[in-house]
Length: 124
Image (cartoon, rainbow, N blue to C red; front, side, top):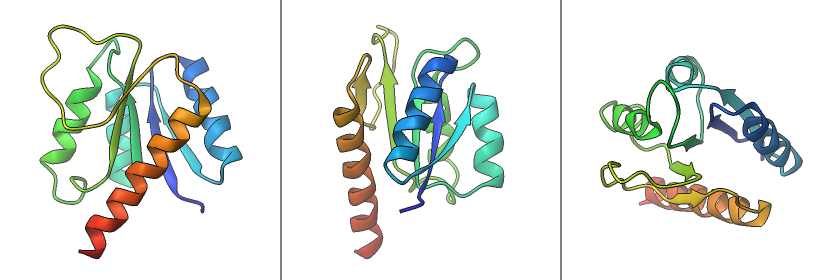
């Protein structure tokens, strides 16, 4: 597989757990602890999927999704949001949302679905 997946979460244990899960399943994890760090990765490294926490201290994960939508080279990258709780002020988003805590199978199914949909869009 060797598909690079960018994981953004301000909690190191969540990033490391996801990195372990991704590596064990043939993906290449790229880790960022903030939206700003994720933007640097996106400007320098091609990724096939982004998984971002919603609630982080500096910026909300939806800010990254909005920024990606405005950039033609990034707008087609599939995006998954994850959260421990959904804030009432979160604007509507068109990305799958996975609620923490999640199990490995849930995450892997969502990853495979997002990548499969992305490939289907490219083929049509």
